[in-house]
Length: 211
Image (cartoon, rainbow, N blue to C red; front, top):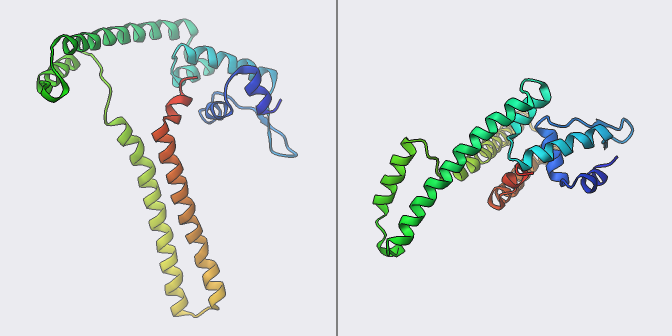
């Protein structure tokens, strides 16, 4: 089967199917003639199991351990129930703060922010988890650093080519062609970085991890 057929049959998008392949949860064979992925009945069954577990919010890492035999389904569910209990307690504690804000009579302009932040910090010491506001910044940092490193390397290549041309002159058309290669790489990196920023902004990565 082709990926379009699998997408329709299982109800998982092509993007998410490829995401699971990247994570090692699915390994379809490739057609030797055209290089396209060929999905079997077994692959469809694996995807259905993945879909079931992801809809229960089982982490990707846990599913991989299940597939590799490092974790039994019973142990996985027991651990997940504990995690859900903790999450339920977290939600309960967050609701208590929301109720305090609701009943305080305060407005955003005169809200006692420090009071609530201190309360939340104390609750964190007791094990309550709040949203990590630095998470998005960290996701942006890695692709930006990678892009900067690649661009600097390509700029160094261009500089090296220019220096070599001065030491041992070469035909201008050939020099321009050689220097165009790292230039094209720089443009490609910038375009890829722009697309990656859009994906992060739109939450596509988080969406892919949900199903």
